[in-house]
Length: 443
Length: 62
Image (cartoon, rainbow over all chains, first blue to last red):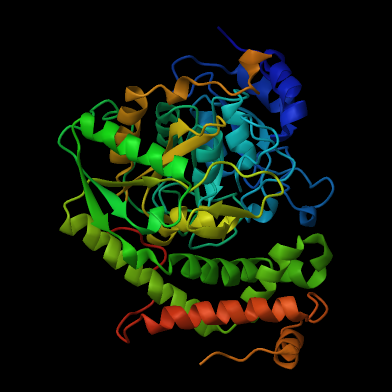
């Protein structure tokens, strides 16, 4: 059946009044796509939202920031990933809220569909909330230190940060050139695989695009995990951690074992220091990109982000080089962990805690307090530093019915393996069938 | 060795970079500089001289 723009957007508008996940809808572009509907395309009829740092022709690109104008001018063309979605028959419904400059884990103004008093995470918080609430089937996000996987975990959906360079970033506003990734969020792992199939692949206008073949992400999706060797962490990801999150992770490990995988503990204590390296790389790269904005319009930048940019601009370049050298150590050690232990994948809790309240700045763990941003980025950013693919898939709920996530990490460009493991786990559990209180079907 | 940041050193650095007036040189900013410096020193202590910076645009293990 050929969809219509009005039937697609009516429930989106209605639900989003309370949720605040979308910054702009695209009835004109959507009507045009509906008129060109072909059932035989890969993403035929799939409703897709786009994070507000990715260009969509005719729509403003505001990046969650006052720097880009009020309202920002409309984009003249689609980002490469958006063009690929349209070509594959995906229906772009509009743009989702982002934390300012894609630099934060709250996404102010957007609620979590499981509890509106809580954050959906960030920086792709609008994308996570929109998918979880059923406003769209999938969404695009970006991930510099966890910004796809954090909202996926907090909102109870799947989200994939692909290998660095697999998905082109032409038309995507940068935060940190060497750590930025673009990837899918979906209700299911299969949704993520479908979207990745459409958007992955070399693009000559992106100098960071990996010159290698891509695709085939659906072919082995149902191959199961029997015989696979999967590592799980000793320490680091669990130190500190919320007890309910830890229990959900350990239960997920048992499910993966029962499915036939050999899950073995591995020492990844060398990841201590990855948080410092992440921030020491993001700050100067973001400061370099936003230098003119910083000099001309500093009052338009949130004070905490502005302080980070100032530090990134002013601190010695030797600090940046130290972080890049530490990044090499981490990458070498991670490779040794995989090769030495003959691992097909590595699983961790996506983040050590469930969704925070909108104004909550710290988590209180049994082992002590930790700032919310450090907690989340501690367990996700190591794989921005190494560039490996990392998927978050729902793995349970807290007693307060807040979603929790399992992170599946693979070898570089082994997205098929990561998706296969995530899909096997998802199929063996019923977490994905749970519907949040704020959802199109519950209105 | 840390840089030993204080109001004068941070202020003159920001002026040299054309960033004076962008951020108030107060105790919070100086603490932020100190913490970032300390983190960088911490990374340095664990590095051996032969480690070169990462080739950030190649994630492959080939």
